[in-house]
Length: 254
Image (cartoon, rainbow, N blue to C red; front, side, top):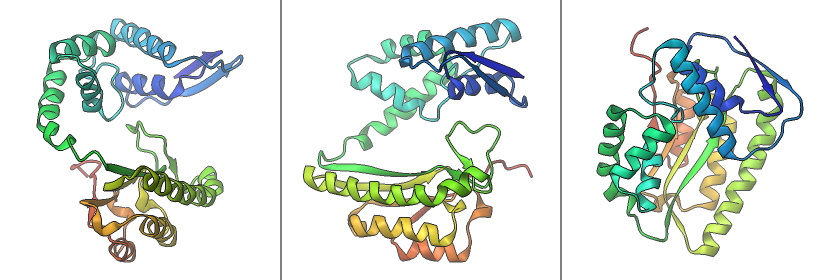
């Protein structure tokens, strides 16, 4: 399927919506004209319009509507924290994102269970360290990620890690100046364990150098693909104080 963008680039969101209707389709993107910088309201309007046209074309709606990201509960929490009631939030998500009643009830239940955990001490924060590389790109993936075997990855991994370490150091300095301490640390992706052992060692060493690992409640590294970690990598995680790994089976059917 060939998709042409004229004077704009909404590839990320448009591709995610198309995948919900055509999961096995291969997409080819063509860009014409200048990529004009529009605000998010234009992108949102384009996504809503595309979704309604696809529903008309296929005769099927999607239970998650155009909520194609991975954190719908955060979207609900933002609405509740802004002062909206659950009924108001439900109407908003149905009208603006075409969320079904079934999925709204699911995320409402999760949000209510999470509420007590979100009320942490005011001087605590959660540190997320992003690694946008994977062994390969899964068909359903909505993340920004690159195969570690690709030419772009071979060019960018080293400078990415160098700049990531600078950002970790700067983040620690800002946190210290503000009197903030990390409550949790999560190294996610992508698939962090897709990196080489020595690359993982560099990143975790920088985290340990700048933050008090012993004081955090939870320190997790995402090892999403079981084929990406080894005894050597697990030893490196243990050496740097990681106490938890997140393993995400892609399927339970071989």
